[in-house]
Amino acid sequence: MRKLILAGFLLAGCGTTHRAVKTPAVSSLQFVQKYIVPHNMPFNGTTVGGLSGIDYDSAGKVFYLICDDRSERQPARFYTAKVPVTGNAADSVIFTDVTSLRMPDGNVYPKIKTQAPDPEAMRYNPHSGTLIWSGEGERIVNKKDTILNDPNITEINKDGRFAGSFPVPSFFHMKATENGPRRNGGFEGLGLTPDGRYLFVSLEEPRYEDGPRAGLTDTTAYVRILKYDLHTRQAIAQYAYKLDPVAHPAVPAGEFLINGISDILVLSETQLLVMERSFSTGVKDCTIRVYITDLSPASNVSRYSSLQATKKFTPAQKKLLFNFETLHTYIDNIEGVTFGPRFPDGSRSLIFVADNNFEKKEETQFYIFKIQ
Image (tube, rainbow, N blue to C red; front, side):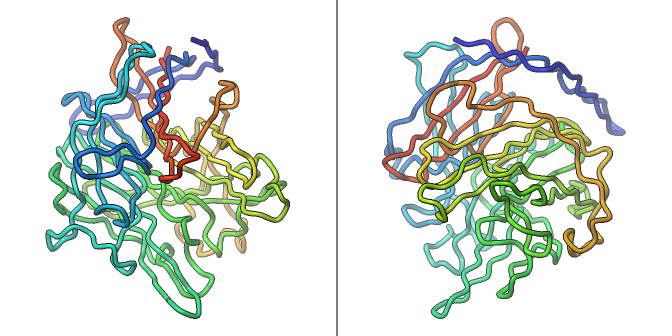
């Protein structure tokens, strides 16, 4: 067990007309345990893998885990599970159920590329008892096919059935031209304020108009974070967030590399945990960095179609909270983060999950931390 002391900060409480909700003060994280789920473990007729988002229902004492299978192996789905926080290496993650995501007509999503979703994040809303999930959509433009599916934010019941959706502003509609979101760069992170008033969704990479993707020395890669009013379901603000450069050069040079937002955890109306995930071909580990992000000084950029063209905005402020490289263990493709249950001493847990992409060389990992 390794104790990791971080700079202290206080997360201010936020309120609604109904009741005040106070977020916890956090001054340090203590690494507790890492769990690895067997590769592509079978469960109730499905393949466990591709876990891209995680959330915890404290009343039901259950974790929700969304799978990013585009209905290629089995229909798009989410799992429920029990994740131990005891720190006992002999414990394991126990999957308890699997549920198919349903289209508005009640059917499961088919394998057909024009209809299959790309689920990336899921949150449980304790105020409504429903789940909200986001998907990146699809953008395939070549001589053979042109497939354009817009990113989505969808509300479902616990049985997976459609309960509603959130309108996506035109800036985030997929285009055959180099406009709007890039392929696999759409809605990746999702979170709700503790008071149930607002929803935030983050893009993974910059829109074409907003500038270049992150590079090895780039300092102009801006992604957008959208703010929705949960009562009206309307997007009411957008904020610019500047990505770090890609952590390592690809091997060989010129091969694929990326840095983007893989998830967000909403602490209050103005403060988020933002997780950046950097990957480079030829480098085994992903570089995962978690930032405390303050939206209060940031400009609302919703009126700007191009951040690259205007430059008249103030981005969100960010401060490094944790770098997974300090764990000195193999770090895979971490894509989800949530608060978890409390430890016997009353302190809160923070849980991360890694997406193995259904690849044999990758791992479905869970990381357990204690918040102090």
